[in-house]
Image (cartoon, rainbow, N blue to C red; front, side, top):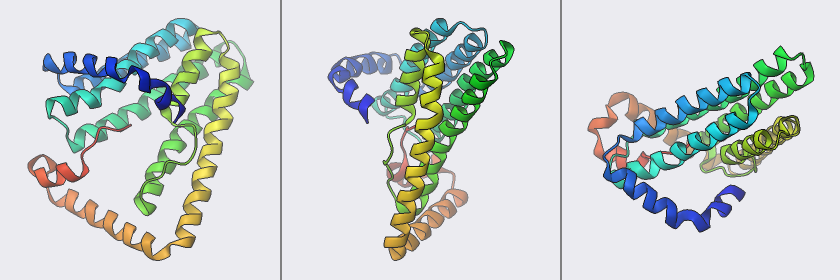
Length: 231
């Protein structure tokens, strides 16, 4: 994705920051919760109409969101639950930010912008859901542009530049186009590779049965195969 390519020149700096944080022994899940708390603050600022301050808070929240996974890997503390928690709290963060905008535009009687915020909020959730559901059927799915980093960056730019209505128009349209793209892609894959899809479904069902039967904290082999800290 575009944001990942832009971030590549700064990877050396991020690695040093991650190493420094990891050396302190701070729990990775604490970083994940810190990101949610800062985004909650940003959502409150959006609700109060303080867009620039909210965007600044999102930058700090984004920092914690970026480093929690690498810190966990650096400390050797990657767990299945950690990746799950990170994904769940990311979704709550998205909802909180858009809810703040929806509240603000409702208070100032800008009904159209409140609707845009609601549509953008729905698109943000559905982009993630469409990917998760598709990957349970056909494996890795990376089609579509509007992943979470792109959405967050656009919200930050919109707030700092005082152009949030324009950002909301893009966020209301772009992510929902990505959802449609993923629907079409999944349909094409399931139509073209029905046998592979049946195998993928069987594998996903087997994995869920294993997870239900065992506590993953006591199953190192399972953790080594499936653990990650993605969003």
